[in-house]
Image 1 (cartoon, protein in one colour):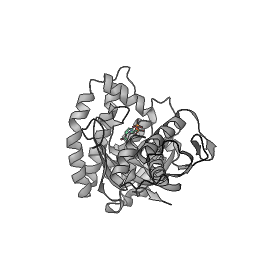
Image 2: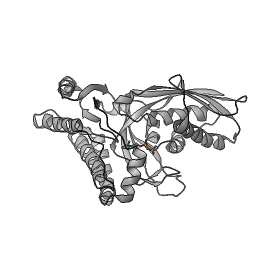
Image 3: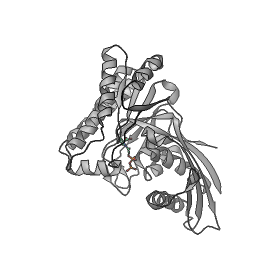
Image 4: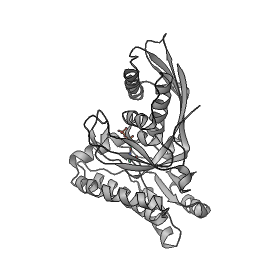
Length: 325
Ligand code: 2P0
């Protein structure tokens, strides 16, 4: 009872920022992302009758503690669904998501684990059902089931039955690019889980964030379908700024930005003023992701690499959803 699956990470253009149910991982807003080809996790799950507990190896190292607990807790859901509560697994994961790039490896990680785990235990789930299950491992992971652009529909049911991702446009629809700008200095990080919780509970700006999501989502989907780069980029950039504004008003206040983060943001805005279309987005960390079109790749990469405090620039294209190996 063994299966291997591969999944790619995704970058949110309309952010998921806040939970209405922490146990089931139900969001307070719908979100939309682009799955990237450069960063992936490959996971093999082997359910074996001779095991008395799960074993989890990440990049050939045994994992314990909180990361182990999250993986076994997720496999409990898989076991429950299959009616095989007493069957444990050997899990081997390989991460090709450079942690320094600031992409959440939990997105590709839980998508690959869900795909391999369900297949290994003999479940045959459709992508919608798989996305709904994956969501309970890590919210953003439910979008990585699909390639290209995907929307996580927040749903309204208390049991989470209508909260899963749906495809918006496949990777082949539009060759839009993402440069991950890696900063050389690090800072103490508020985890995205803790950050979104504090913001929901204390930020007076949070209601403003929620109020503007439906319009952002509607408009960006139209822009993606029309391959309107300026519209897609400007909505994504503004949405990112709104998310980060909520953290500044939280109690206690916090920000994920570093001085170099702001320098990269300003450089992107200057590039636009000089006629090079580029837009930024930032997740729960100091690194910046820059959206651009293939014809401007050379120019943009050179400019980003020249910013003091930038240690690397990693380029990526739209990627595919989960696959089985
Ligand atoms: C996103 N982020 O939409 C947003 C934008 C960070 C900023 O999803 O608690 O690791 O496992 O559901 O998915 C990061 O949060 O959080 C995230 P959990 P997750 O990509």
